[in-house]
Image (cartoon, rainbow, N blue to C red; front, side):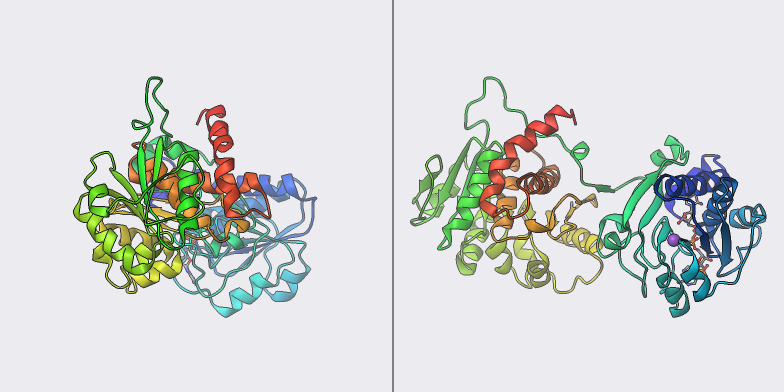
Length: 456
Ligand SMILES: NC(=O)C1=CN([C@@H]2O[C@H](COP(=O)(O)OP(=O)(O)OC[C@H]3O[C@@H](n4cnc5c(N)ncnc54)[C@H](OP(=O)(O)O)[C@@H]3O)[C@@H](O)[C@H]2O)[C@H](O)CC1
Ligand SMILES: [K+]
């Protein structure tokens, strides 16, 4: 049973009432999407199965032909047993032939109580369904991590309750849920208040973008310094993004970066001189810099106590030596870079990002189609708005530039990183298929305008 369910019960809410609402919500979601058809409910031994019995009763009340196939009897004296006792329709054996001939199968086998790998017989049964509606999660998907325990079927529709779980947002679970509906089932506000939530879906309600003061000047809007190396295109992409997201001034620091557009300042001054400039509080270190140079400058910036976003070569320079990143504000690794820096961290993405953030005392943005942003204090957000065509060269440099551009305007590191990841995904969606990294920054102003319009 999940923490929220336990909290609900301790708030005096009856589990049976929640189950009734949950099963009713499943039936309602089905009726809204499908024509009446022959339904088979595969019911497991726990409350997930109990929800299945309620959904069966609600569909039958509407005249749908429904049968329930229990894979195990409900636990004695449980809410599920009470729900099963109210089912007066056909109870049939769970066999593959029946599953195949049903026009719609409801997967009520395992939900939040999944405790081990699903056995091959159950996997085969679920896999035989022509059309599958999963209650809470497709059985086999771990709701806490999105990992698959043994195997899990691909659902057409998943109906969950009270709030999305990490498993609905993290791959591979996310890909197996199909359309995902989150139903309100009467969970009291007091139950949510009792559970200290530390994991959220990344949306604009989590953060507030900085607003420039009416009388502010460019330095007040933030002065970002980006180290530029032999592949100066990476630093230029980051600089464009930082400027579009509102940094007042961006300097590229490097020997001679090529192709720098007007509006970006280039400084060839020695690093020691730049680092001691008190206006240069925030730095981006890594993109296109070269591993050796990145390692040296990173150490210098950390020693000077600067707020640093470390990406790309700065991460590679810390391969197997994560402690070299201690003192930075945020790191933005993709899976490969993460594995190089933290080879011993092997768990799911959410746990790994959290563990890494705690270890180095910095925000970790573990990039991917389901980017995880984790803070050293345990807060974490999972992002789900990135289109697949965002996976393109230079996209990461742009993200690092947005994060640094928000940090320099005074946003706290966790909020700046969450906002950067979401804005990056929204800009890509707005740019559409065929985007190249150069397009992303130009879409940021409209994305920001839309956030303001919807009053987040
Ligand atoms: N607020 C809500 O979100 C509500 C959710 N509801 C539903 O309740 C389930 C969670 O119910 P729970 O009883 O805790 O767990 P499950 O139904 O998922 O399954 C537990 C039983 O399954 C056995 N189990 C677990 N994994 C396996 C496996 N791989 N193979 C075989 N058996 C397995 C487990 O056995 P144990 O031996 O480990 O004890 C349990 O018997 C949630 O998902 C929602 O659907 C409420 O109805 C309403 C409120
Ligand atoms: K299920």
